[in-house]
Image (tube, rainbow, N blue to C red):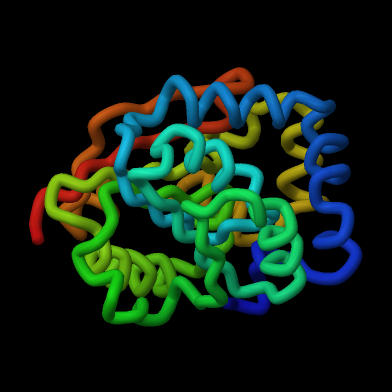
Length: 218
């Protein structure tokens, strides 16, 4: 990952990830992510799901409950600290696998054309543009034709029109790549890689977007 990115969580941030995330969202995140995965994500029993940047495993558990025992969730994560946290949190779910993997590199061969769904949460903005291209290139190898790719991240907006607290967060607390992502041509870039926008949901006064893309080629 680029030195300008902050999406790889280690050390203190990893240890208290749940607490920090809840605090930054004013304790709204747990309910929010349950709504997003439960109501805005098309998931069927038996689906195979790839989470790109599994973090602490909270999202993986929500997906595992939806796909049930016939399905599976594979969480790919680069941070050893977060892998340890995710493995502890998901240890009672036999349909969850946590693997150390850099999403900018090719995936293990057994996952070629394997997944029905790919999900990425607040990671895409932390990639350089060339890294986004590399990530999408490798993602297409593991997603089935017609598979769905969900991106939960900052919405493309004019920062000058955003609330002051959001401007402060983006400029002072986030990485420089987050600011650049606000004007990133997300839909056009995904379209170049044969991902067609199907649905888009906006949250928190349109500051956060949840985009569903369909992969149209094998």
